[in-house]
Image: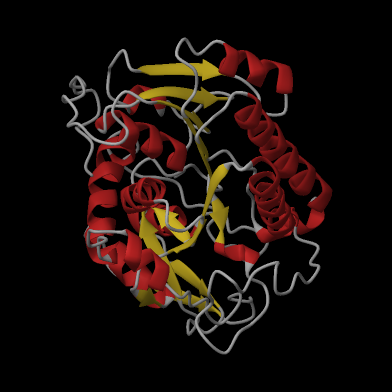
Length: 362
């Protein structure tokens, strides 16, 4: 998806075709963030009414969404259960579905230095969302999870069953712990209360409206800023590690399809294409039309060698071809030019974070 040039008038949302989301009221948490805003936009395009819950819109994301009476931004803190309940109670026709995108994220160092903060914040937010969804009779609840719940190495591509039900090694990583215990709580709610709770497990998500601000801990935006500034992209380790990257609207389409089909409540979400950081850096430079300036910091850890997910279930659900990384980066570059390069023709180089990071869901 390519956004219109900065300053151009936004067009009203196009009339939506009839479908399973038509007329439903969906509460999206973290709607002023990267992933949450795309879920709000995707649901609006499908004819839903969207309650866009957010703690603040410091990146002016909500203004980039379609102008329609079916979008209702609401400011509230997920840790304030009373405030969250007022949102559920104030929905005129009730809440039909919840998509929980809000999450506390950070680089590996911050996650290890503040594991209690990450764990407590993540689990309390999920607990409030699940309990209110139960009390207000919400039909479908989506909790965005992460492939980082898989810490145990396997000889085969990691399947959905290779999770906390098989092994849950402790690690002083608050994000990892929060995602695991949130999933446990979701499974317990589904078992006890018969709720439909879907848990897509994401790999690295990228695309328009990602957080490209200075100091970001996210891989793709960091590379974009470096390349745009004419600075070398530094690769940690020897560059042999591999990852998969999923374009944000493909994530939205696959997740909503997952709910519509209702055949699996847990799904690995990734693209089939696997790339090294060197290949990713080259694709980013090509998308921006910048020269390839790539250096290596072999003393720094590049993280785990690979994370290969079994995508068999995902291919049962989706009926579309996800974008290739090249296609997705070109679309991201078009948005980046209009929203960042036009305002900042010479972005300052980003400082390196103090520890290796991997992209986390916003």
